[in-house]
Length: 330
Image 1 (tube, one colour):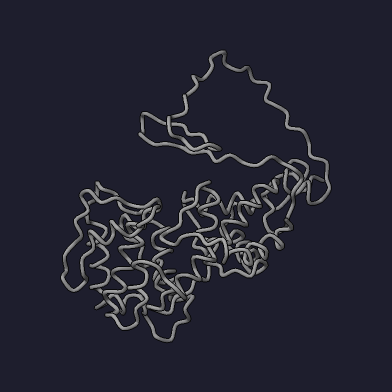
Image 2 (cartoon, rainbow, N blue to C red; image 1 turned 90 degrees about the vertical axis):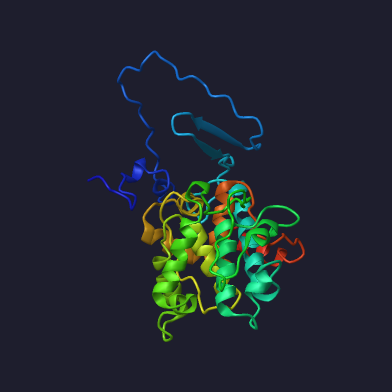
């Protein structure tokens, strides 16, 4: 009788389970249907594209698809990241997870730039929450002064004024769409107004656990134009800077964002429940908070590091890097 694996394939046809169960992989037989004689025209790589990646532009939709180069299959295998077959890919993932952990520690113990105002316990909680929203929505720039543009356009919560976003420069993980103007910010203010304040909207029931509060706020913040990455980082920032008691219990995976795509690639499966379970297993084995996997998987899948306003520190990351590398068998 044929045996099917957890990926709903025959075991001998599954590249993951066949290796795990020491079953000889059946060679793929190409279709006998005749191929068309026409060839696809090649698309030249745009100037300025990064080494190690390729892009394909679609003129009809005006979008660019980026393919991140993958490491060569060198026989690497880890039960924590069963989708990876390259030690180079695993090594890059370890580096990005270590940096993401470093960023979380900086937010909690020594927040830089505008994050310091968010973490100021003596300031008004509504202003702190509003500033955290603007940081997550616009995203810090990559460079010497990552908060310059956010500082330039920011407004106070008490004023009720919207930032002037006509020519604002945004960071790589921004949720801002110039065509929407300030509609997303208006939706956020309306969301807070329905609860009476931002604090009431985030806190909900005072008896909730931080994980439940995080999940509820994440769901309620599904506002027009506020994508998954901005919502997740907003709540992480509010929690790490001790504005509200918030802690991620899941990665809230789903959609076409880099975190979800990277998780599917690393964990070798697409089922949301199994993705979350394997993400939790990886975080626990590496001694990392689950929240570190958000930025870590994002940067790893993207192939280019987004710092989100926190500079790398080679002196503070080796310990985390060693722990992750050991867990991954590197």
